[in-house]
Amino acid sequence: MSRAGKATKHRRRKRRTPVGAAPGTLVADPGASPTKLSLTLIAPDKFRTIANAGIADIVDNRGEWPVIWVDCVGLADVTLIGEIGRTFGLHPLSVEDVVNADQRPKVDFFDDHAFVALRMVDDAAMHRYEQISVFFGEKFVITFQEREGDPFDPVRRRIASEGPNRLRARQADYLAYALIDAVVDSYFAPMEVIGDEIERVEESMLGGPQKGQMQELHALRREMLVLKGVLWPLRDALAALIRNDDPFVTRETKVFLNDTLDHAMRLIELVESQRDTLSGLIEMHLSLSQARTNDVISLLTIVSTIFIPLTFLVGVWGMNFDPDVSPWNMPELRAYYGYPAALLFMIAVAIALFGYFKWRKWL
Image 1 (cartoon, helix red, strand yellow):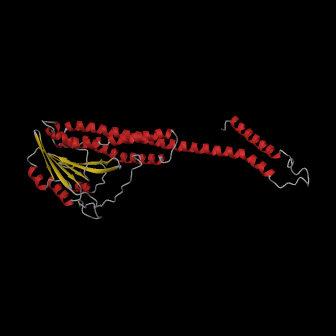
Image 2 (cartoon, one colour; image 1 turned 30 degrees about the vertical axis):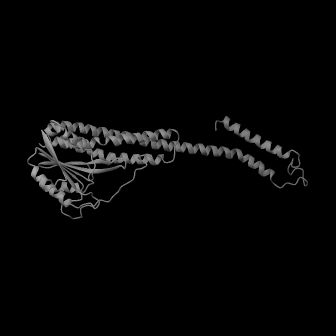
Image 3 (cartoon, rainbow, N blue to C red; image 1 turned 180 degrees about the horizontal axis):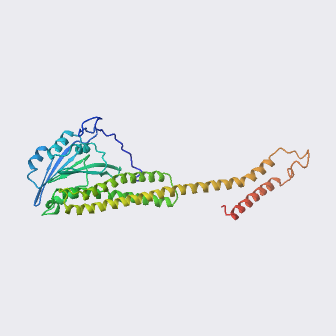
Protein backbone atom coordinates (compact mmCIF):
# COMPACT_ATOMS: atom_id res chain seq x y z
CA MET A 1 0.00 0.00 0.00
CA SER A 2 1.31 3.47 -0.86
CA ARG A 3 2.30 6.13 1.58
CA ALA A 4 -0.76 8.16 0.66
CA GLY A 5 -2.97 5.13 1.01
CA LYS A 6 -1.72 4.46 4.54
CA ALA A 7 -2.25 8.06 5.61
CA THR A 8 -4.70 8.52 8.45
CA LYS A 9 -6.05 11.63 10.00
CA HIS A 10 -5.08 12.34 13.59
CA ARG A 11 -7.37 15.11 14.75
CA ARG A 12 -6.81 15.12 18.46
CA ARG A 13 -8.65 17.89 20.27
CA LYS A 14 -6.13 20.01 22.13
CA ARG A 15 -6.79 21.50 25.53
CA ARG A 16 -6.98 25.27 25.27
CA THR A 17 -6.75 28.01 27.85
CA PRO A 18 -10.16 28.50 29.53
CA VAL A 19 -12.22 31.42 28.27
CA GLY A 20 -11.57 34.49 30.41
CA ALA A 21 -8.33 33.17 31.93
CA ALA A 22 -5.48 35.58 32.56
CA PRO A 23 -2.97 35.97 29.69
CA GLY A 24 -0.09 33.55 30.09
CA THR A 25 -2.13 30.86 31.85
CA LEU A 26 -0.63 27.45 31.14
CA VAL A 27 -2.96 24.48 30.69
CA ALA A 28 -1.47 21.09 29.84
CA ASP A 29 -2.88 18.96 27.08
CA PRO A 30 -4.12 15.65 28.58
CA GLY A 31 -2.36 13.77 25.80
CA ALA A 32 0.96 15.61 26.12
CA SER A 33 4.16 13.57 26.45
CA PRO A 34 6.08 13.59 29.75
CA THR A 35 8.50 16.47 30.07
CA LYS A 36 12.23 15.80 29.94
CA LEU A 37 15.07 18.34 29.89
CA SER A 38 18.51 18.05 28.37
CA LEU A 39 21.18 20.70 28.71
CA THR A 40 24.01 21.38 26.26
CA LEU A 41 26.75 23.73 27.45
CA ILE A 42 28.85 25.21 24.66
CA ALA A 43 32.20 27.00 24.63
CA PRO A 44 34.67 27.55 21.75
CA ASP A 45 37.06 24.84 22.98
CA LYS A 46 34.71 22.44 24.79
CA PHE A 47 31.16 21.36 25.40
CA ARG A 48 29.17 19.40 27.94
CA THR A 49 25.81 17.64 27.81
CA ILE A 50 23.58 17.00 30.84
CA ALA A 51 20.76 14.53 30.24
CA ASN A 52 17.69 14.56 32.50
CA ALA A 53 18.60 18.03 33.71
CA GLY A 54 16.61 20.18 36.11
CA ILE A 55 16.18 23.85 36.91
CA ALA A 56 19.10 23.68 39.33
CA ASP A 57 21.44 22.56 36.52
CA ILE A 58 20.31 25.49 34.41
CA VAL A 59 20.83 28.01 37.21
CA ASP A 60 24.23 26.60 38.14
CA ASN A 61 25.66 26.62 34.61
CA ARG A 62 23.96 29.55 32.91
CA GLY A 63 26.58 32.13 33.79
CA GLU A 64 29.54 29.78 33.40
CA TRP A 65 29.27 29.02 29.69
CA PRO A 66 29.15 31.33 26.64
CA VAL A 67 26.09 29.54 25.20
CA ILE A 68 23.58 27.26 26.88
CA TRP A 69 21.02 25.18 24.98
CA VAL A 70 18.01 23.90 26.90
CA ASP A 71 16.02 21.25 25.02
CA CYS A 72 12.62 20.50 26.57
CA VAL A 73 10.87 17.42 25.12
CA GLY A 74 7.23 16.89 26.13
CA LEU A 75 4.77 19.53 27.30
CA ALA A 76 2.96 17.74 30.13
CA ASP A 77 4.74 19.48 33.04
CA VAL A 78 3.49 23.07 32.70
CA THR A 79 4.95 23.92 36.12
CA LEU A 80 8.46 23.12 34.88
CA ILE A 81 7.83 24.96 31.59
CA GLY A 82 6.65 28.02 33.51
CA GLU A 83 9.75 27.83 35.72
CA ILE A 84 11.98 27.78 32.65
CA GLY A 85 10.16 30.85 31.36
CA ARG A 86 10.69 32.73 34.63
CA THR A 87 14.36 31.68 34.83
CA PHE A 88 15.15 33.15 31.42
CA GLY A 89 12.64 36.01 31.56
CA LEU A 90 10.57 34.72 28.64
CA HIS A 91 7.40 36.57 27.79
CA PRO A 92 4.35 34.83 29.35
CA LEU A 93 2.30 35.01 26.15
CA SER A 94 5.04 33.19 24.23
CA VAL A 95 5.30 30.53 26.93
CA GLU A 96 1.52 30.08 26.63
CA ASP A 97 1.98 29.62 22.87
CA VAL A 98 4.47 26.85 23.62
CA VAL A 99 1.87 24.86 25.56
CA ASN A 100 -0.93 25.57 23.04
CA ALA A 101 0.97 23.68 20.38
CA ASP A 102 -1.14 24.53 17.34
CA GLN A 103 0.37 27.89 16.51
CA ARG A 104 0.86 29.23 13.03
CA PRO A 105 4.60 29.56 12.21
CA LYS A 106 5.64 33.01 13.38
CA VAL A 107 8.35 35.07 15.05
CA ASP A 108 7.95 37.54 17.94
CA PHE A 109 10.61 39.93 19.19
CA PHE A 110 11.00 41.16 22.78
CA ASP A 111 13.53 43.34 24.55
CA ASP A 112 16.14 40.66 25.17
CA HIS A 113 15.01 37.58 23.25
CA ALA A 114 13.10 36.31 20.22
CA PHE A 115 10.46 33.61 19.94
CA VAL A 116 10.09 31.46 16.82
CA ALA A 117 7.24 28.95 16.42
CA LEU A 118 7.70 26.41 13.64
CA ARG A 119 6.16 23.16 12.43
CA MET A 120 8.56 20.28 11.93
CA VAL A 121 8.12 16.81 10.44
CA ASP A 122 7.30 14.40 13.27
CA ASP A 123 6.33 11.28 11.29
CA ALA A 124 6.52 11.55 7.52
CA ALA A 125 4.90 8.14 6.98
CA MET A 126 1.82 9.16 8.98
CA HIS A 127 1.73 12.72 7.61
CA ARG A 128 2.14 14.08 11.15
CA TYR A 129 3.80 17.32 12.17
CA GLU A 130 4.55 18.88 15.53
CA GLN A 131 5.30 22.33 16.82
CA ILE A 132 8.85 23.29 17.69
CA SER A 133 9.23 26.48 19.72
CA VAL A 134 12.60 28.25 19.77
CA PHE A 135 13.61 31.03 22.16
CA PHE A 136 16.99 32.65 21.84
CA GLY A 137 18.71 35.67 23.26
CA GLU A 138 22.14 36.58 24.52
CA LYS A 139 23.94 33.38 25.55
CA PHE A 140 20.94 31.03 25.50
CA VAL A 141 18.77 28.97 23.19
CA ILE A 142 15.68 27.09 24.40
CA THR A 143 13.72 24.59 22.32
CA PHE A 144 10.37 23.05 23.23
CA GLN A 145 9.16 19.92 21.42
CA GLU A 146 5.87 18.07 21.71
CA ARG A 147 7.40 14.58 21.44
CA GLU A 148 10.74 12.83 21.16
CA GLY A 149 12.32 12.77 17.73
CA ASP A 150 13.76 15.74 15.89
CA PRO A 151 16.09 16.63 12.99
CA PHE A 152 18.75 18.09 15.32
CA ASP A 153 21.21 15.17 15.37
CA PRO A 154 23.48 16.78 12.72
CA VAL A 155 23.63 19.91 14.90
CA ARG A 156 24.49 17.84 17.97
CA ARG A 157 27.26 16.05 16.06
CA ARG A 158 28.70 19.35 14.91
CA ILE A 159 28.76 20.61 18.49
CA ALA A 160 30.48 17.40 19.62
CA SER A 161 33.06 17.38 16.82
CA GLU A 162 36.69 17.66 17.87
CA GLY A 163 38.48 20.96 17.68
CA PRO A 164 36.98 24.42 17.30
CA ASN A 165 34.04 24.82 14.97
CA ARG A 166 31.63 27.52 13.91
CA LEU A 167 28.77 26.32 16.11
CA ARG A 168 30.87 26.52 19.27
CA ALA A 169 32.71 29.68 18.30
CA ARG A 170 29.71 31.83 17.44
CA GLN A 171 26.95 33.28 19.56
CA ALA A 172 23.56 31.87 20.50
CA ASP A 173 21.81 33.31 17.45
CA TYR A 174 23.94 31.10 15.18
CA LEU A 175 22.91 28.00 17.14
CA ALA A 176 19.29 29.09 16.78
CA TYR A 177 19.85 29.49 13.03
CA ALA A 178 21.36 25.98 12.81
CA LEU A 179 18.33 24.47 14.56
CA ILE A 180 15.85 26.38 12.38
CA ASP A 181 17.79 25.42 9.26
CA ALA A 182 17.63 21.74 10.30
CA VAL A 183 13.85 22.01 10.68
CA VAL A 184 13.48 23.58 7.22
CA ASP A 185 15.80 21.05 5.53
CA SER A 186 13.90 18.15 7.13
CA TYR A 187 11.03 18.87 4.70
CA PHE A 188 13.06 17.92 1.62
CA ALA A 189 12.98 14.16 2.32
CA PRO A 190 9.15 13.98 2.62
CA MET A 191 8.83 16.14 -0.48
CA GLU A 192 10.97 13.66 -2.43
CA VAL A 193 8.83 10.76 -1.18
CA ILE A 194 5.65 12.57 -2.22
CA GLY A 195 7.20 13.32 -5.62
CA ASP A 196 7.97 9.60 -6.08
CA GLU A 197 4.39 8.74 -5.14
CA ILE A 198 3.06 11.22 -7.70
CA GLU A 199 5.27 9.73 -10.43
CA ARG A 200 4.17 6.20 -9.51
CA VAL A 201 0.47 7.10 -9.70
CA GLU A 202 1.02 8.98 -12.98
CA GLU A 203 2.77 5.98 -14.57
CA SER A 204 0.02 3.61 -13.43
CA MET A 205 -2.63 5.93 -14.86
CA LEU A 206 -1.05 5.79 -18.31
CA GLY A 207 -2.08 2.13 -18.43
CA GLY A 208 -5.66 3.10 -17.71
CA PRO A 209 -7.50 4.44 -14.68
CA GLN A 210 -7.76 1.99 -11.80
CA LYS A 211 -9.75 1.78 -8.61
CA GLY A 212 -8.08 3.60 -5.72
CA GLN A 213 -6.03 6.04 -7.80
CA MET A 214 -8.39 8.95 -7.20
CA GLN A 215 -8.22 8.35 -3.45
CA GLU A 216 -4.42 8.40 -3.57
CA LEU A 217 -4.41 11.60 -5.61
CA HIS A 218 -6.75 13.37 -3.19
CA ALA A 219 -4.67 12.19 -0.19
CA LEU A 220 -1.51 13.57 -1.79
CA ARG A 221 -3.27 16.81 -2.67
CA ARG A 222 -4.39 17.22 0.97
CA GLU A 223 -0.78 16.71 2.01
CA MET A 224 0.27 19.48 -0.36
CA LEU A 225 -2.31 21.80 1.19
CA VAL A 226 -0.97 21.01 4.67
CA LEU A 227 2.60 21.72 3.54
CA LYS A 228 1.50 24.96 1.92
CA GLY A 229 -0.13 26.06 5.18
CA VAL A 230 3.13 25.33 7.01
CA LEU A 231 5.72 26.67 4.57
CA TRP A 232 4.17 29.99 3.57
CA PRO A 233 4.09 31.41 7.14
CA LEU A 234 7.51 29.83 7.75
CA ARG A 235 8.85 31.91 4.89
CA ASP A 236 7.34 35.04 6.45
CA ALA A 237 8.87 34.20 9.84
CA LEU A 238 12.33 33.77 8.33
CA ALA A 239 11.98 37.03 6.42
CA ALA A 240 11.04 38.79 9.68
CA LEU A 241 14.15 37.38 11.39
CA ILE A 242 16.31 38.75 8.60
CA ARG A 243 14.66 42.19 8.60
CA ASN A 244 14.87 42.53 12.37
CA ASP A 245 17.37 45.05 13.77
CA ASP A 246 17.65 43.67 17.31
CA PRO A 247 21.26 43.15 18.43
CA PHE A 248 20.80 39.48 19.39
CA VAL A 249 20.50 38.60 15.67
CA THR A 250 23.89 39.52 14.21
CA ARG A 251 24.56 40.53 10.64
CA GLU A 252 26.72 37.43 10.10
CA THR A 253 23.88 35.14 11.17
CA LYS A 254 21.44 36.94 8.86
CA VAL A 255 23.59 35.87 5.91
CA PHE A 256 23.01 32.25 6.87
CA LEU A 257 19.32 32.89 7.55
CA ASN A 258 19.08 34.16 3.98
CA ASP A 259 20.22 30.75 2.80
CA THR A 260 17.56 29.09 4.96
CA LEU A 261 14.99 31.46 3.45
CA ASP A 262 16.10 30.32 0.00
CA HIS A 263 15.52 26.72 1.07
CA ALA A 264 12.02 27.63 2.27
CA MET A 265 11.28 29.34 -1.05
CA ARG A 266 12.47 26.28 -2.93
CA LEU A 267 10.18 24.08 -0.84
CA ILE A 268 7.26 26.39 -1.58
CA GLU A 269 8.01 26.17 -5.30
CA LEU A 270 8.09 22.36 -5.05
CA VAL A 271 4.76 22.36 -3.22
CA GLU A 272 3.15 24.60 -5.83
CA SER A 273 4.60 22.56 -8.69
CA GLN A 274 3.48 19.23 -7.23
CA ARG A 275 0.06 20.61 -6.35
CA ASP A 276 -0.40 21.73 -9.97
CA THR A 277 0.75 18.29 -11.11
CA LEU A 278 -1.77 16.63 -8.81
CA SER A 279 -4.57 18.88 -10.06
CA GLY A 280 -3.65 17.91 -13.62
CA LEU A 281 -3.57 14.21 -12.73
CA ILE A 282 -6.99 14.45 -11.09
CA GLU A 283 -8.40 16.06 -14.23
CA MET A 284 -6.60 13.45 -16.34
CA HIS A 285 -8.08 10.63 -14.24
CA LEU A 286 -11.57 12.07 -14.63
CA SER A 287 -11.07 12.42 -18.39
CA LEU A 288 -9.73 8.86 -18.74
CA SER A 289 -12.56 7.49 -16.63
CA GLN A 290 -15.09 9.41 -18.70
CA ALA A 291 -13.50 8.20 -21.95
CA ARG A 292 -13.53 4.63 -20.69
CA THR A 293 -17.20 4.98 -19.74
CA ASN A 294 -17.97 6.42 -23.18
CA ASP A 295 -16.23 3.46 -24.85
CA VAL A 296 -18.27 1.01 -22.81
CA ILE A 297 -21.49 2.87 -23.57
CA SER A 298 -20.61 3.01 -27.29
CA LEU A 299 -19.95 -0.73 -27.38
CA LEU A 300 -23.17 -1.52 -25.56
CA THR A 301 -25.09 0.80 -27.89
CA ILE A 302 -23.66 -0.88 -30.99
CA VAL A 303 -24.41 -4.36 -29.64
CA SER A 304 -27.93 -3.26 -28.80
CA THR A 305 -28.37 -1.72 -32.24
CA ILE A 306 -27.31 -4.96 -33.92
CA PHE A 307 -29.72 -7.02 -31.86
CA ILE A 308 -32.72 -4.70 -32.30
CA PRO A 309 -33.59 -5.88 -35.87
CA LEU A 310 -32.80 -9.48 -34.92
CA THR A 311 -35.13 -9.24 -31.98
CA PHE A 312 -37.77 -7.76 -34.28
CA LEU A 313 -37.45 -10.62 -36.74
CA VAL A 314 -37.57 -13.26 -34.02
CA GLY A 315 -40.62 -11.56 -32.55
CA VAL A 316 -42.42 -11.52 -35.88
CA TRP A 317 -41.64 -15.15 -36.66
CA GLY A 318 -42.61 -16.14 -33.17
CA MET A 319 -46.20 -14.90 -33.53
CA ASN A 320 -48.99 -17.48 -33.73
CA PHE A 321 -49.70 -17.47 -37.49
CA ASP A 322 -51.87 -20.14 -39.08
CA PRO A 323 -51.03 -20.66 -42.79
CA ASP A 324 -54.16 -22.89 -43.17
CA VAL A 325 -56.37 -19.85 -42.69
CA SER A 326 -54.55 -17.68 -45.23
CA PRO A 327 -51.30 -18.08 -47.21
CA TRP A 328 -50.57 -14.39 -46.42
CA ASN A 329 -50.34 -14.88 -42.65
CA MET A 330 -46.65 -15.83 -42.78
CA PRO A 331 -44.80 -17.25 -45.77
CA GLU A 332 -42.34 -20.08 -45.50
CA LEU A 333 -43.73 -21.37 -42.19
CA ARG A 334 -44.01 -24.84 -43.66
CA ALA A 335 -40.88 -24.63 -45.82
CA TYR A 336 -38.47 -27.52 -45.26
CA TYR A 337 -35.46 -25.17 -44.82
CA GLY A 338 -37.40 -22.28 -43.28
CA TYR A 339 -35.59 -22.34 -39.91
CA PRO A 340 -31.98 -22.28 -41.22
CA ALA A 341 -33.04 -19.74 -43.85
CA ALA A 342 -34.33 -17.45 -41.09
CA LEU A 343 -31.08 -17.85 -39.11
CA LEU A 344 -28.95 -17.11 -42.17
CA PHE A 345 -31.06 -14.05 -42.91
CA MET A 346 -30.58 -12.73 -39.36
CA ILE A 347 -26.82 -13.40 -39.52
CA ALA A 348 -26.67 -11.49 -42.82
CA VAL A 349 -28.47 -8.55 -41.19
CA ALA A 350 -26.00 -8.55 -38.25
CA ILE A 351 -22.98 -8.70 -40.58
CA ALA A 352 -24.37 -5.89 -42.71
CA LEU A 353 -24.88 -3.68 -39.65
CA PHE A 354 -21.38 -4.48 -38.35
CA GLY A 355 -19.85 -3.58 -41.72
CA TYR A 356 -21.82 -0.34 -41.79
CA PHE A 357 -20.52 0.63 -38.32
CA LYS A 358 -16.95 -0.10 -39.41
CA TRP A 359 -17.42 1.98 -42.53
CA ARG A 360 -18.66 4.90 -40.42
CA LYS A 361 -15.68 4.33 -38.05
CA TRP A 362 -17.95 3.84 -35.05
CA LEU A 363 -15.98 0.72 -34.16
